[in-house]
Image (cartoon, rainbow, N blue to C red; front, side, top):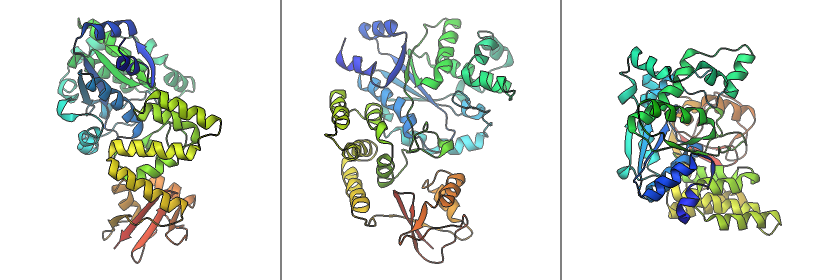
Length: 392
């Protein structure tokens, strides 16, 4: 098999369903339709979601047609595949606001001009009860409640809404609507991805093959999730992104290289071996990692400046010269300002940082008040890596 195809089917891949079918499709020379759906449940795409986007780009580079589905309808309903509790419904207004810059963010990784972009409200909004009933009849409730996280909630006597049952059907019907040959997604999406195969069979289409990717951990070692505030976002500044990557646990370095860069795997394996025997300092490997990712999402020149800023700031104890400057408007709190500028992910993250003593002025004084209100231009150090200048 072609070396590029072999890497596509193995690098960062947890499972391929059905691999023999997919190999035959490659051998046939057919131009495949490759599907990835993303729900805009937050304004930012983070590196966890960038993993399948990277795989989507790999297919694009091989000449296949990639289809990015923005879940403006499924996002309202909410997917609980990776949740231990019921996910609240979002309003259409919130979804609309969240997706404003989704295409721009995705364009940092894939070639948007050669991508088919669809919004699943196109086909889901107008479905009648009769059509929804036909689709629902393909599945049994037993299949749904056998899922580990759903079973756990039921065993503990916690609520599972009927709305949650609808989500896999909706995602599955997306595959019918765009006639997908292959769908990409995380391991937590397996049930939903398989639903697409079942519905395609029902509607007389050849079932899509599936590639699931390994999930990636965030800055605190837990699964990267916007709700936990442990994300590295595609909207982060180069310096912030570089610093966050430098803060990940050493044991994640190889995984990040595999999933979020295209450094040859032979080279990655050498780095792994050299770190194990003490020949390569993990910090140096992490700097290389940060530079690779920042180059991908910004530019090489910007990545080099971010590296210099990091080294100057955290190795030499200096304050960066190119600190992001934000203006505090009348009646606006510091917390509201930093959340609006994506410097902190949420009000709860700001509170946690302040309570843990992780917010300081440039001269080292801790900020102890959630409602901190500066009386003059102030430089804040947020966590270990982020600096911001607040001007009045």
